[in-house]
Length: 436
Ligand code: PA5
Image (cartoon, rainbow, N blue to C red; front, side, top):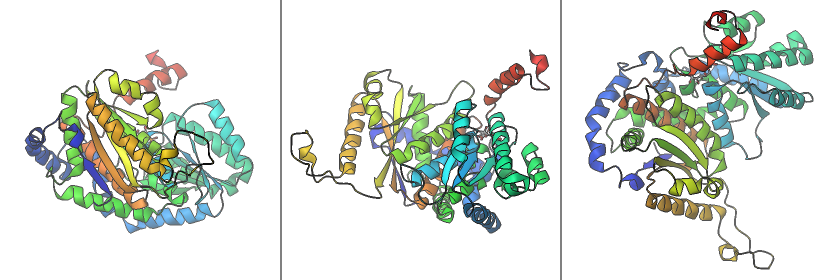
C-alpha cells in the first residue's frame, strides 16, 4: 500500500509501543476471525475481498449503465441515505473541483433529509436541466430516500413521460428482495445490484458508490486498483508493525481505554470534508453500541482552529485527534509579492498556500499534544482515484478490527431502529398504530 501512511508518534506519550505490542496476540486471533468469517456479523463480510473478487461483469454493468446515463444528462441526482450515499459523495467531492464537478454532469443529492425547502429547491434547479436519477437503497424501505424517489419519479414522468423516464432512472438495490427491487422490475428501470453480504456503510466499493462516482467522471477501475493494493497489504499480515489499519485500530482502542472517548477527525484540505462524513458514519455506526464506543466527530481546519480550536486546546481532556492530510496538492498556488502596502503576510510571498497550511498542521499537532490531546496521522500521497480506493479500504479494515477489539458486532446497527419505530407510530404507518 503506497498511497497511505499511518503514524502514531504523537500518541506515544499516551500509548506505548509495549501496550500496542501486547495487543498483537488478540489482533492475530481477530484477524483470523475476520478472514475466516468466524466473528460477529460474519454474514456481512463481503466487503473484505471486494477489490479482488468483484466480477468483471459488475464493473462492465456499471460502465455500460454509466454510458447510457452520462450521454443524456447534465444533472444527476443521487438518492440515498447513510451508507447508500455518503461514500459516493465522499469520493466525488474528494476528486472534484471545490466548486462542482467539471468532468461530468453536475451531481445533486436527495433523500438524505426530510426537508421540503431542500427538495423544492432541488426540483426547481432541475426544471431546465437534462436529468437522470439513481436511487440507492439496499433494503428499499428507508423512508427518506423512498419519499425523495417518489418526488423525483413524479418529476421525471412529468418531464419525460413514463417511457422516456425509464432510461433515465437507475435503481441500485438488493438482487432479489425489497419494494425497490419489485418496482424496478415492474417499471423496467436500469438496475444495479448490491451484494447480499455487504452492509450499507461498507458498500462504497460496490455499485452503491462506484456507479455515481463513474457518472461523475471518476476512473472507478483505478479506485478498485487502489483498494486492491490495500486489500493485499492489510489481509496478508496482522503484524502491527506492518498492518497500518490494525495499528490505527489498536491505538484507538487503547486511547479509548485511557478515557479518550472522542475521536476528532481533523482535515485541512476541503476536499476531505465529505470523507470525514463518510468516516463518521462508518466509525459511529460500527462502534457505538452496548454502552461503549468512541464518539467520532470531525473538524475542518484551519477554519475550526478559529472556533472549536479553543475547546480542543483547553476543554474537557477526553479527545484524541486523527489528522487526515494530503501530501501533494494537485496544484501549488504561490502567495504573490503583493501590490504594496503592509498587509502582514509579506514575509510569506513566494511560498505556497500548502507550505503555510503544513506549518498550521504541525503547529496544531504540537499545541494540542501539549494540551494533552494525542494525535494519530493518516497521510494520503495525493488526490487520486488510486489513493481514494486505498483510503476507503484502509478505514473499513480498521473500523472492523476496532469493533472486534471492543467485542461488538461492527456490521449491525440495532440502535437506528428505535427512532424509526417512534416515527412510524407517530406517522401511523400501517402495522405500527398499536404501539401508540
Ligand atoms: O450502514 C448501514 O447499513 C446504514 O447506514 C444504511 O446504509 C442506511 O440506513 C440506508 O439503508 P438502505 O440502503 O437500506 O436505504
